[in-house]
Length: 288
Ligand code: 6GU
Image (cartoon, rainbow, N blue to C red):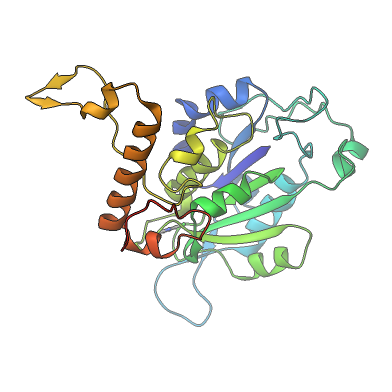
């Protein structure tokens, strides 16, 4: 997978280099670059925004600047299926480049391969526009985006990006997802993009050391919040680790964890219990 972000504050994304990307980029599963939108501004003040048509408060980001930035970034070669661990070939993806505003692809792909790819299919390209007016970003959305070949995050500031940019790309072969990370307002799309990128990258097949933990974790396949966890010492501040976890009886431990996850979910997120499908419901789950 290749991920690009475009922002007037590309330094926000330096944070991703701290832990997340080490593993993904070293293993060749991910290429990442953060670009400064002002690189595509044309006037001497390098302006990226203007007053809203129809009047009103704030500023709107300019379609022409965004159009040029996105055209150039989507033209970057990507390798279809490079994210998939079952790829039959040793596919190389460019090493991470955390330097803002620079391109990191080393051009190992030739143009025809970039157009159709070795997998014989066109790359799946997605434009993500973070906005508080978007659809809610959930674990299901993260799972879907983990199968894209190229994700481009267009981070707006101010009152947002001229709506014609999303309209234009919706009519192209690029998927457009306007996404919100929750019902509150941030000053720009940067922090929301970091949240989404972190959620997506850990789902890239082959990235997680132990894929089983993806089932049991909160919002995983079980549809429940995670059970409580403990580690040594066995007694801390006069509190013991629940005896059953020290018993070595794996079936009883699994049952206990299921009950704790179910009860916790019922107490904190009854909406998630309502949404469980029959395959996720267990005969031994308590009546509710
Ligand atoms: Cl994606 N962007 C902004 N600016 N605010 C948000 C958001 C996104 N999601 C929730 N609040």
